[in-house]
Length: 307
Ligand code: SAM
Image 1: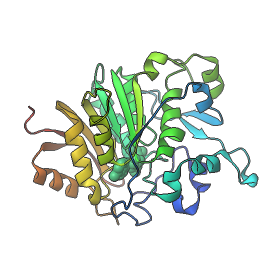
Image 2: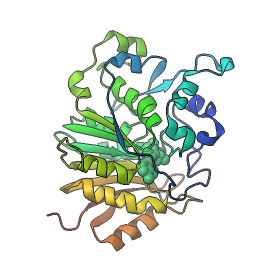
Image 3: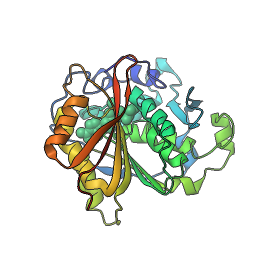
């Protein structure tokens, strides 16, 4: 894992209790979960503007082509020790008692994949899309802005979904023109049509696919599954593979962005592609290699026998 800059939440991370400040793969606790986070759906609150309270909206430099905005939580008064992050954490038991999987920062392969989408002119229109292990959700937001029919966002931690993904998606469902400062956003209407295309889920991968497949609401499999920096831990490959194979449409496609190696974790492109080969369910091919700094790769997976 590189030590690149946090894009938008250094304050968030520095204010977190020590036990949750580091993702599991950095604090070496990357063995299988003893009690995995149960899968659940997070509804969009009725009072949407409340989600953006105490948030600072910024537009990411270098991403003008997708016009993506992100939010960060504002920590009003550090000295009181009762800032909104502390409150947020205490309402998310998975971060107090469990594992934090890293979605509070935007990892660099997300940007590689967003660049690739525009270079390769990947089409999202009318597609049903999953941003798997979404963190800030920029991949799903890119699909949403590309007129996807539906976009689902999944992250391990419920706090990530509620404090980062959901606000990010909402802030990208307003402010069509210019710089989306929060003030501007609050003055405008949210685009309900766009919001209604999105669903949000937290929980561990195996539980997530079972949750969707066993739900009372009919579930249409995904045309595209987008996932970035999710193959650092070989212990999760079985659950990841199972999720991809159960949730992808027969003629669907997975775009996966990863560092070549995750030092100290054992995961990376080679172990993952060997795992895929052994399973004999997907064909995998590297569609782009980025050899600047830490080597990174974009992989495409399609079913071997689409039937
Ligand atoms: N995709 C985001 C990015 O590139 O910025 C976040 C990457 S973060 C390093 C890894 C993400 O994978 C976490 O946010 C977590 O949600 C997800 N993840 C990893 N292992 C998981 C598992 N076993 N079950 C569910 N989610 C998992």
